[in-house]
Image (cartoon, rainbow, N blue to C red; front, side, top):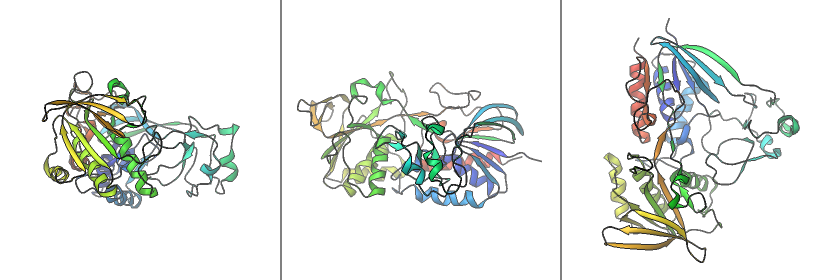
Length: 406
C-alpha cells in the first residue's frame, strides 16, 4: 500500500500539485505554516498576464479541495524532520495551537470585542486584532487568534461572545509523525529585507513601500472601494516612482535577477492608469525583462501617457526640505543627465528570496532549493527559482506527474 504524497507549502504551487494528484486518485497531505492556504497570491490585487484577481485561480481550487476526500491538510503546521527514503519517508510535523476550532461560523464577534491589536502581515496598513481573518481569500474561511499576542485567560472576551463554543484558549501545539510516499516542496518566496538598502530610506519613510505592500494596498482599495492614498498623511498621490532591481542584481545584496519584478511594476503602473487616471507613474529600470506574453504588458505601458519608462539607476531617496514629497536622485541614461525629482510615493521592486524550512534539503549558491535532491523529493516553483504564477502552476503540475509514479 502506498503512503500519501506530502506537499510542504499551501500556496498556489502546493495547492495545484495537491488537486492534480488527488484527481488522479492519489492520497495527498498538505502542510502549510500559515493559518490559511493560498500563500502570497491570496493577498494579491491581480496577477499577470491577464490581470485576473486571485479568485480567478484560487477559488475553484479551494472548491476542489473541499470536495475531494483524498486531500487532507494541516494549517499552522511545519515539517520538523524528514528521514527515510523514497516510498517510505518518515516525517515529523509540528502543528501550532489553533485557538479557534472548526465550530467557527465566521460571525466576527470575536474580533469585535478583541482589545489587542496586531500589525498586518507586512507591517503595512491599519492594525488588526489578535482575533482575525485575512482580508484576501482565506481558506479555511474561519477566524484565528494570534497566539503570540493574545492575552488568553487574562482577557477571554472572545469566549464570552462566541455562541458556538469555538474558542479554545487552552489549545496546545502537537507533534504528528506520518509516512509519505513522495514529498513535494512548495515553500514559496518572501521579499528581500528592504531596510538593508539604507540609501532607499525604507525603514524611516512611510511613503517608501515595497512592491508587495503596494499590491496589498491596491487590493484593499479594490475590496473596500476606497481611494488610493499615501501612508504618511492619507493624501492622494499625484506621482509615484517605481524603483526596479531594489536589491536584485547587486553584489551587496542579491546577485541574481528576481525575474518577476519588472512585470509586477508594469502591472502596477497599468492598474494605476486604469483605476486612478489622475496619478502619473514613472518606472526607473536597468533593463526591463518581460518575456513571453508579459511583453504585451510592456507594449501597452509604452503607449500610455500616464506611464513613463526611464532607463536609469536610482542612487538614493531623501525627504524634500518642506516634508511634502520624496526626492529621487537618479542617473537618466538616455538623457545623459543626473536628475533630482520629486514624487509623492516610491515603490521598491524588491527581489525575491526563497522560504526555507527544511534544513535537510540541499540549496544552491543563492539559497534556492536545488533540483538534485535525494530520490522522491521534488522542490517546485519559487523556492527553486523566481517564477510568476503561471510558471509556478506549470512547474507544480510537472512535479505532480513525477510524484504519482510508483
